[in-house]
Length: 105
Image 1 (cartoon, helix red, strand yellow):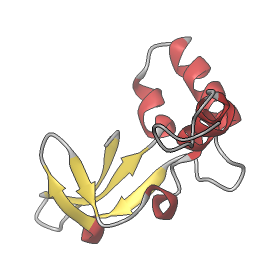
Image 2 (tube, helix red, strand yellow):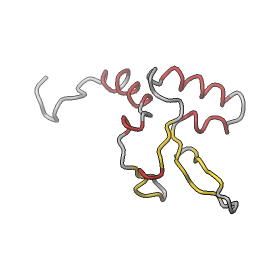
Image 3 (cartoon, one colour):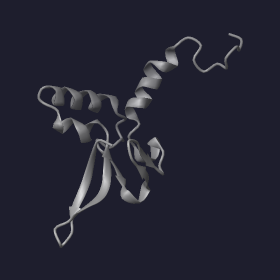
């Protein structure tokens, strides 16, 4: 979880509406120029159809403690661009990746 979306009730109390994920939910809090650099890097690594900030409605929240568990996959959230890029450009190129342990070359 990188940020939260809150709304204000009529009585003035704040209500958690959604959790926001992804570098662009987090980078606005970075000091300059780190924030600009992180934003630019993320914009280049994400898939073109991925949102800059993934919004997960509170109804999909399963558990919130030191980890955030949601009832959605990374693909459903739409925030797996960095993971996809790393897998495609780095992990898939590791010799032997994708073979069963002890398998033939």
